[in-house]
Image 1 (cartoon, rainbow, N blue to C red):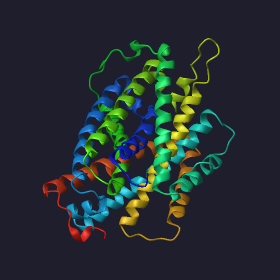
Image 2: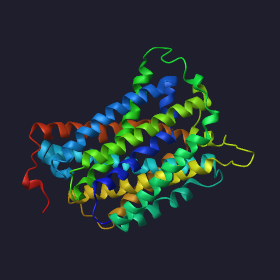
Image 3: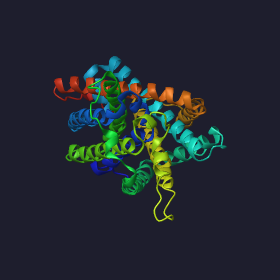
Image 4: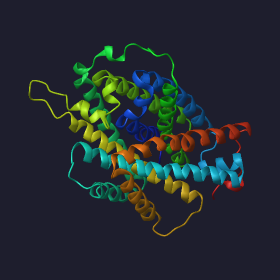
Length: 361
């Protein structure tokens, strides 16, 4: 398990992509309205093309930092890598803050935010410090369980969904709100880029594109089904005013007056999903900083300490958190989509050549 292969990378892509779009879709639905699912299809199509191009480029030169330096030169490349690293840190804050706030808002209302974050970040640090093997094992197990629970919920909530809530399609035409929702969702789909630092550890890249694209397509179809299912359950006017509609959706589950507590499935998805995204992001950030030769004693503790403080400040107030998440969608778009795409276009134009002077010996 110490050796990373392309199948492992597929699980990593699923782990970093899946949870954000499912947890707080009301941010996009407020902009896109009833037709948000159409905006998601457009965003999904763009991210599929983006990942196809990026994975093909990475199969030519495996290490992220040398590629950035070779394409843009060391000064500009360093700036681009730093922007990517800042987006990674913002993702650490997002994962800790949303998990804690979602649990307090829906299940543990009298529990202080700092306590929930304290039960989240130290275990993540422990897992990451155990190394790549531990991160991969936890990711694979958690993603299998989260996927199974998601499929169960899709079946259990079917009888509560009404297709008429999706109609009329494009009743107001194509609006700016749909475009804004598409941009925000593209930013969160762009979290797939968190997997890029892991490419350097691949033994071979022969099937990188194949396994990477299978993972992306798996997430895309899951998100489209989840988005349409949410709108079909509550109708768009209600969803716009819900903080975490998936948690409320599963509380409807009731079969034979016995099978209830569907929110337990979502609790697994939220706690497990955000935990996996956090540890994968933290490990990716450490890889990037190591390649930049940034050596600070107790670095992982410094990063996690700053993330703890930032997550607490964001999550303690629901309105502040959702304002942060609005900005985060654009941070993710710039750091994970626009910057890497521009770098890879230049890298491709230069013939996919990595300069030896930038390759760490």
